[in-house]
Length: 255
Ligand code: NAP
Image (tube, rainbow, N blue to C red):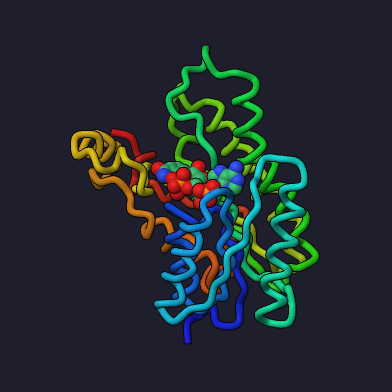
């Protein structure tokens, strides 16, 4: 039995990439995992199958984030799925991982529409997901918000995206204080450049260049970030709340 046996987790954006690795890891640690996706149902089903083939339990939930009613739809789908499997809809671990990027758009060119879109997906949706999930949370719950090393490492072409991650770190800080009386911890995890299955990671020269940013001279693996999330989700991390965990492989050390 894993250390998360009896717990229920919801991981947004776990059809692919870092979210998938987090869902697989929490499933391996014993949690029942709600695998959220926006568009890619086949990929979400694959994540569910990966968890089940590992002996774990999971189900997929769909909700497009960044549009009106998104948080309501997500939490409703979660409640239905959890009730069907466990007879109740209590939540222990929420990972706000789903994210959209503005990769490669110079500050001079970003449009108000693009700016609003990343904020709607990366900042607004997590806020209302947390708000709607609050009545479901059991004592000792965990909220883990996926930020980015870009809140501490300047890249002007990603300014709008980085601003959304600054916002999610504020979500962690203020909700940490708010939810402490219920024994719920709220923390941020900041990945650096992490292999997420996108085509750029199949180009050796590009990977070599990206790897130079990390003190270890490697790009991160999704599992590297999932390990940090699994720690925060565990009882061992019960005394950590409102924290920023640097999971960039030393990128923020500079040099
Ligand atoms: P990814 O591979 O692009 O996957 C994104 C996930 O989020 C997918 O499961 C996708 O679901 C979901 N998603 C995206 N937009 C959505 C929307 N509007 N509605 C619903 N679901 C949506 O991302 P990743 O690289 O693993 O990144 C995961 C998190 O880590 C993000 O918050 C990202 O900002 C952060 N991060 C990543 C890196 C990196 O180098 N990879 C670095 C720093 C921070 P569907 O495909 O089903 O729509």
